[in-house]
Length: 318
Image 1 (spheres, rainbow, N blue to C red):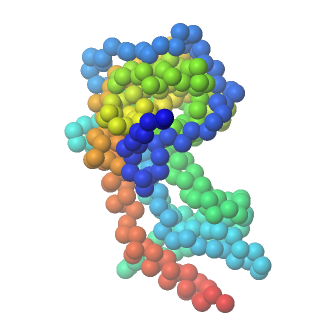
Image 2: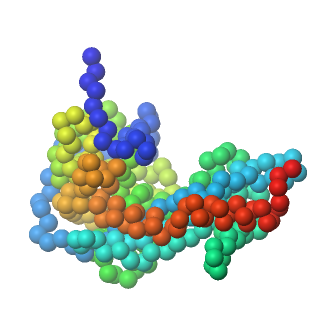
Image 3: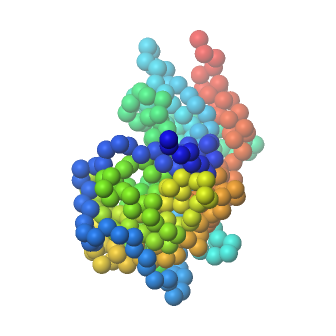
């Protein structure tokens, strides 16, 4: 009989593990070694200057774009990105806030302007293909991810950080250097069954060997790290994150970064019960997300202002 185990993530955020059944064919397993054993790097002598880059987004108002007999999904949304520097508490800076009117099915619309007091908030229009309700959401998500990548690129170019952790995959950023993408939710089974059993043997601070991924926009080296141990009732994947670095870095640099992340990231693991996506959501990232959500503005006030703007533009629906 199977055993029941707990996923400690808050159900509002979905599951921490949503694996597809098939392993991508473009995964190269033995780029570091053909001996798939857990790897325990030595502890870092000193904590490098680390910065964490992340973003949040919010749908302020769901909309429809109507053009003759055509009805397409749309939304007015906000996003914010910023950086959290490793400290206690984390130091937050370089916060950027953006707004967008995202219209599906390739339709175009003038920018939407909401007025709050004496301030005007402009939602520049961005057209996306597709008529599914999720297409405008993907458009807003992609705009936030582009802003994250731009911020990470600027910080990397400044040379201020010895290690930059971008929360999410490196879809929009490909550089050779200490820029690592961190994926909290595991949605693809990159390891075949004969290799995936290693994940259950990972202790906190240990990692898998590196493997190569070449199925998306960016060719990457990737590895898994357990950043915290779960409770006895938690599932085997609790505390496991996947990390990746651009293959523009050579294999020796990728191995160095893999060892470094396995060594230092457990220091930043959040505690179950204090963060809804613990322990995978690193506490500097959790603090950054809290600040960014605050900077998005009051959701009810924005919704009412947007509804007024839609009314002034077109009047009542017919």
